[in-house]
Length: 106
Image (cartoon, rainbow, N blue to C red; front, side, top):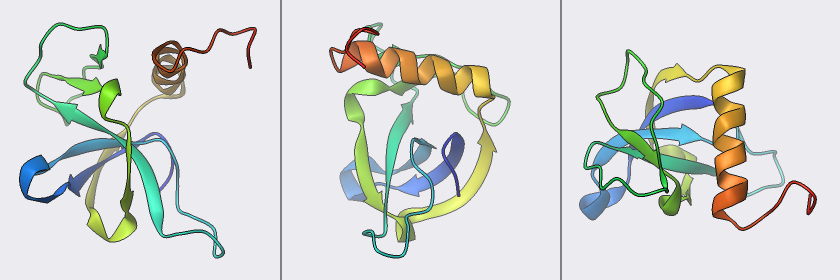
């Protein structure tokens, strides 16, 4: 598992099983067994926190940047595919905006 891959993830009873983008990859030996993800949703509201990246392995929807979270690696069920490097860069840029960073802050 590595950053940029999309996996089916068990987000628990309320969150269901849904596709999620991995922002981080497999943790190091001395780290907690967690990965940071952004869930994909098909329930679009048209707000700026939704990032649509069409992929053949995903239903029409968007990654929801308001729902960044870390989950145990045991909740990752199966790999669906991955984003291209340019698509992942777009995610990173939108996350920077979402988190209130300007490019000069980094």
